Image (cartoon, protein in one colour):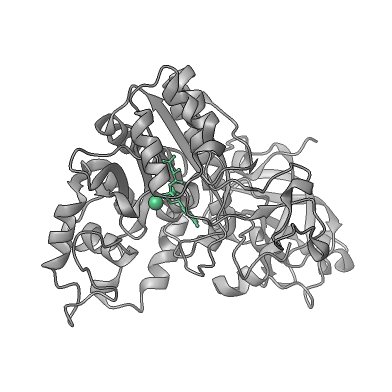
Length: 479
Ligand code: 4AD
Ligand code: MG
């Protein structure tokens, strides 16, 4: 008999029919007459219950059915009354495909802490929580491509090894074929990259935007979806050294068009999760409520599914940075009435506590802040006539803070070169980028969605290390 996945079996009404199911044992319980095996195969959050008539089977075989063991079972699809599911399997033949020593297996049939599972990251998919997250992550990847495909955007693969620092923030991982212990030096003692494979300093990309702009100014509307790398040594629950970013870039879009697209995009992804991942979301919601039981009522976050529906139902607030600074200056965020990082006025960069205050306490809706001071933003953003601000936009979400960063781009060649000089960005190395402004330059805009920040929001998880399969942070890069 061919294998049927558990997600399909649980929908079956073909009672009496024979089926084969394969998976990993979650638990086994019972008595001398009958055993119940909870089996999971990763196809859904639910286990299927296998009913084993003990006298019909070899005792030694049944002993090998322990938590974590892989088994293949032939049996009859039966209607269930007591297992929480409508369908169970009456076992006829059992094969243990892979034994699992319960003394040594780290994953026990109990609730493990997320810290413990992070230390056992190689096995954490075998828990309900990480199975649910993996399935939702896949659904979100699919929804990203579906959204842009329906809109006629072209997906562009931008390079991972590059010579450009797109954000100008210097948070790059160097890429070199030189011998690290024996770097060739110039006469002045600097590393001589002319002897490198690429003949110059290269790094892992911090953003595909600049290459994306090249494509947008030919194809009209494009998007990238790739890995990005930031060598910032920040051990926060919102930062990774390796994360995935979706960067749409559109010719003929101004900042308003850009904001419209960002809002529509986020809502599309959230609706997709609600429409397609409800079983997993319900599981994660219960998990979160369990975790929050011990918190004070006013510190508890909104129930997960309600929170997702809430974002769909509301227009995002759109507000210039200077107005947000006024709100923050006049606010009392807590009993002491102070933020950890004080707001000095125009020019202050916003910390996530400020962003979250605006979203969670003041407006109580997602917020898009625009027109930031040019000195805290990247060189490529379009300059406003006030000489002080740029056409930037950050989308701020509850629980997350900044989920999207983007802008209208400076399309004017002279203004862009002038700004690059001001910021010490070598224009001669960026000739390929500047060519877009020399040959048929147009108004254009784009943004970057941090995929793991989206995943944090959709799953309700609190730590970004838990929403990417293999987190790379200063402390976690074991394999
Ligand atoms: O604001 P950022 O740095 O913007 C850019 O990279 C632009 N080139 C995007 C564009 O306009 N095409 O990053 C964009 C988003 C942030 O809003 C955040 O969601 C995410 O990427 N992000 C990170 N996510 C996880 N770990 C990090 N270290 C991140 N840094 C940024
Ligand atoms: Mg940003």
